[in-house]
Length: 192
Ligand code: AMP
Image (cartoon, rainbow, N blue to C red; front, side, top):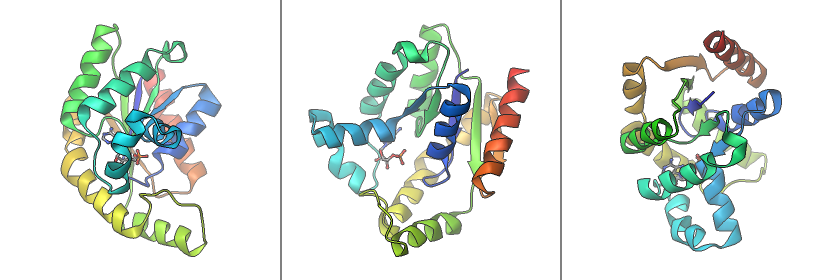
């Protein structure tokens, strides 16, 4: 199954992707994780995206489309993958559709984790107060900007996928276990 997990930054896409990998063996393809690995390793790609990510801007479509194709062509993804944080623009969504068609595949489901913006900000603030380890782009200011970018460039994808009849939503505000159970129920319904 090819699943797109959709939602604003901090909605819990990464958490649910990792749970799907653990419980169902579905490989996670997170463009954010891949880019952070490149930054850590100091590769040319990492160096080229470091400032963009720290500022909460989107990396170029060309860059993320390239790394997604590379990731998807690994043997681990032969039965599909969970796309986490990709696509984030209409151009990326169209490129993903084309990439899958070329491989005789398709997106089976786009699952939106619905969350409230004020709660996302307060979660980051709580993590800062607790002295938690933060990403370079996990400050209240940058998160506010990432949310702005999300609503402007990424949220329009909801209509794109609704139009394809692929969009389903779950309540991302519920406790993690509840969200996990809701995600499982939707997936089982699609697979049935
Ligand atoms: P994430 O971990 O998914 O929140 O991604 C962290 C950052 O990586 C984003 O704020 C962007 O700067 C960059 N990024 C990740 N995925 C994409 C994408 N699909 N398109 C553009 N930029 C991305």
